[in-house]
Each structure stands twice: as C-alpha cells, then as structure tokens.
Image (cartoon, rainbow, N blue to C red):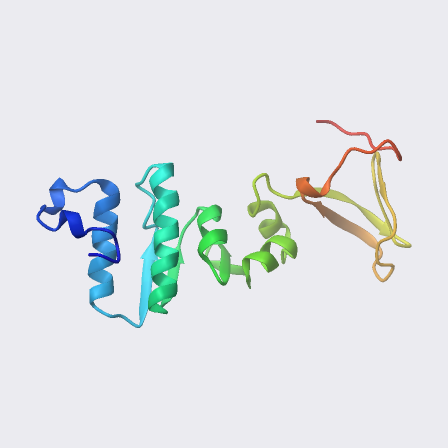
Length: 173
C-alpha cells in the first residue's frame, strides 16, 4: 500500500476509491503476488491526462525498484516512449520493429513506423536519389550517401527543419 501511495485509504472499499486509486490497488494486488513478469494491458486508458502522467511515473518507478520484467501494451506512443527500455511496434499482428525508444524514433525500420512514431509524425516525401542528391518537385537535398539510386522516400522530422534564407524550397503548408 505504501509503495503505491494507498496507505491512507486501507479502510475504504474498492467502490469508494477514485479511478487512479483503483488502478494503484490493482497494481498493488499484482505486486503482492511477486510475479516474474507483469503484463499490463492499457492500464491507464480510463484515467484523465494529469492522472495518466502521474501513474506513468509511478509505474516506471515501481518497475525499476522491483526489477521485474514488464510487458506494457498501449496504443499511446507517449506512454511507450517514456516507459520502455525496448519497444515492439506491431501492425495488424505483425512485428514492424523492435528497439529502444531512441532507435525507433531516429531510425524507423519502415514508413509505417516512421509515420506512427512522433507527434507530429515524420514527414514522408517521395522522390528519387541520384549521385547523392534527393529530388522531388520543389525539393533538392544534396550530400547524401551515393550508394543508392532510384525511387526513395525521404523522412524528415519536423524538429529537424529550420527556416533559412539560403536555397529554394516550395510546397503546400
């Protein structure tokens, strides 16, 4: 009860607890069993944003303290990126990529992962690569690896873009 901050509520029945307190009580019931693995399936989905954030921190702290492998199923990429040591991205039951949050974010295995991770997601621009230069209508990016040629998709994270007074770029915003 102390570990999940419920010591002051031990005299209450489950129906008298808030949503967050009920989630912590469920976590405490799992901890008491001393499992080898936790499986958490969307444990925070019914909580408001502020409580979700608090519970994410609490779950991460408890997981680190107990050193128990935790499989955490979520559709919320913020939860996945903040809680995970390793992430498995799946699409229609098929694994698309396994890696650390940094690997998934910085080196997505395919366009599904690139378009799924990030808020906003990676911009994907179809074009061609020739002699180390990517070209698409209104775009030219030089200085790329010269070992590939042909049709490619350029992935650009919004935070990697900046406004400059050199070069030409046109497009629809």
